[in-house]
Length: 227
Image (cartoon, rainbow, N blue to C red):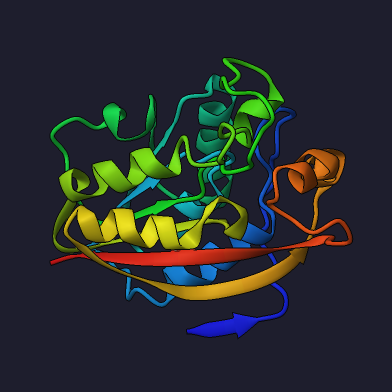
């Protein structure tokens, strides 16, 4: 397991549309983990919540057969254009996480889902905030991915998911273990708060999620294997 003070730089993309999640620290950390998986021409990869398509394009560059999914029409457009501009073949589908690929299974599933805790209990149905809002505990999407992992992974298949320590790394490990997967944290990085966390720090302090003087968060990549 690596214990970096800072996450690696995210993969560069030619197009980032307004309202679509742009590659950031978490993208770079997950891309680093992806490159260690020995992805090649016989690897079927699913990117859940692809956003601008950075991870999908990265997997395609490594030779994989890639399917990318996002519920946002703008994200689907951005991922398709970025794959085209990068000269990579990526199948991009619009849909709600694994529901977009019913009955399909993959060797590798990667996901950088929304994971920011929110003072609002509901989830936004449109707009930029849909790329990061994840309910009061930040786990609205992480928990769904943990539950779906056994159905979308082939025997020996691997899930790589990145999220903030604010939404509970131990909980993710427990849920994946309960689903029958062997899970561990493979990468960590400490990064500065972005604009969203800075704006809601008073609420995070009141909830006991951060200390008053805290201005950095830990990101983790969790690797789970279907056994």
